[in-house]
Length: 133
Image (cartoon, rainbow, N blue to C red; front, side, top):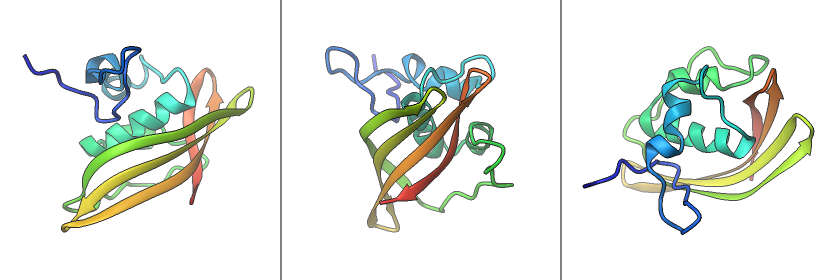
């Protein structure tokens, strides 16, 4: 039996990769009914959305004040892994998550190292913006 592992790579308490359905899947499949519980979980689910090319989820989870009109995916981009370096609250309804996402496009390896900012409004976390590091 092969588990459908979550693209974000989150591990359980025993260090085993989580299945998609036990990790980012509920958020990705129904953002309205299953909001991310914290900023790190939202960031992980957004990474998974890039892997799955889910523009609908990326737009819905982007704060309306900074949301672009559309999302264009880089043709041939394959996401290879995510490393969350740190996640910390910056206020009662704000947080930062530093991460490195690895990808390969046209045979060329790339790294996206970002410090992302998140806001919580009405009990729901949203991606606000980020700085490339």
